[in-house]
Every structure is written in structure tokens, then in C-alpha cells.
Length: 140
Image 1: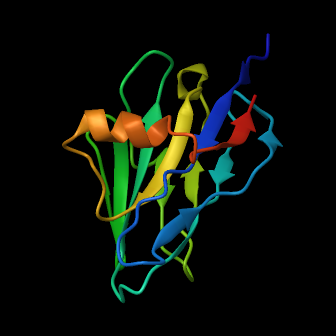
Image 2 (image 1 turned 180 degrees about the vertical axis):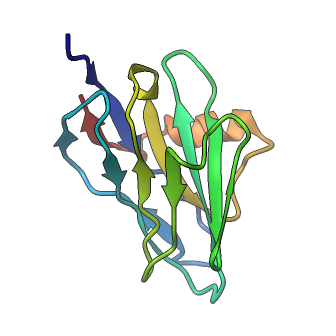
């Protein structure tokens, strides 16, 4: 039996230096177990060497750090396999590629531009659920 995945991609808008921000596209994406998906995230920054982050938030849970990208380097969190979760900064975008999709990949995904609030979950939740934040991507 084929299982369908539901992934929500939400953007957090962190003000860094005036107009610095991340932009994630809207719309629904449907994927099945074993598929590969790419979740888009573009950004605007005055920083010539930006650092971008991807996070995953499962239902009723805190956001989990997946990886960060800077320059030509990607650092994955221990919980996320590099062969399944990967991203690269390309022309002001940092698409997240998830391969060999599993049912456990169903979650909210979002990207952030440094500085983030990784050590302050109270502020992160405030930003995540504020009226200015919108859910931008459904994958199911």
C-alpha cells in the first residue's frame, strides 16, 4: 500500500539588516514514500556570505534543526542523514532536497536566514505562529 506524505513548508521572516528575508513559495505538493522532493526557499540579504538553516517541525513538537548552509559547506544535524537531506546555496536560493521519502518525513519545514533564534524556542514559537507568518507549502 502506498502511503502519502503531508509536509507543510512555512517561512519565518527574520529581520537581519533591514530588507534581509527568506521567501518560500505557496502551493500544495503531493509525494509518495520513496519519492524525492525539493522544497524551495529564496532569500534576500546584504550579507555577502549568508548562512541559511532548514528546520522540521512535527505535530505537537518543537522545531528540529536539520542543516545549515554557508559558502559551499553544508552541515547536517546528527538526526538527519546527509544522503537523504541536502541543500546548497545557489543564486540566492537554498532548496532542500529530501530523498527516499518516509512517512516520518511528514512535518512542517521552513528555512531561516541567520541570525535565527535557535537557542530561544519561546521567541521561535512567537515568530512561527504570529499573524505575519503564513503556511506556504503543503506536501501530502
